Image (cartoon, one colour):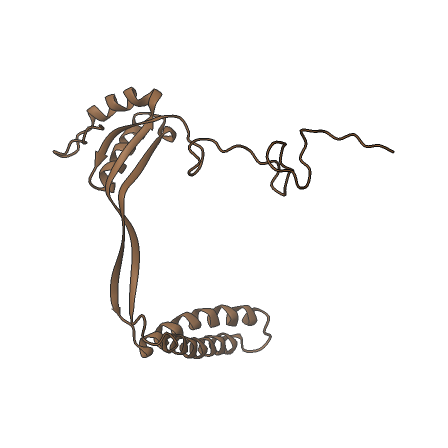
Length: 195
């Protein structure tokens, strides 16, 4: 018995040439675009750049109010910075307090679930769940904070901020967007020309 082989098909041990076998995600395809990130859509044009997000949002809102196809527009933040605002000092007592609050919510939820199916005093079941959750939450919060060894003795909130916000539209509707943008008064601020 003889088998025919297809010289262009992939075979184990074959390097170069040939096609790759399909995997769980299907056949591999050649990357589109520059190979960095998702494939590029239609070409876009920047119609204005603004120092804050509300100004850029106002421009897009103005375009929407004037029946511009806003699904062909985007607000792009550039020069991104991660800002971590320190909210306060974290002590073991404060960690226990935060843990007690979180545990109390969880205990309340579990108490409500058990309280639904309780024939007797359902209020006592809910309160017991709340108290037990708060106690265990406080214990876990204090233990978790003390296990950090003082490496992070503060609480904070992180946010991503941009120094500039550009409004971009697809190239074939850019002229319409520019005309509508010319009608908008930005309170003394004019958009920086794209360039």
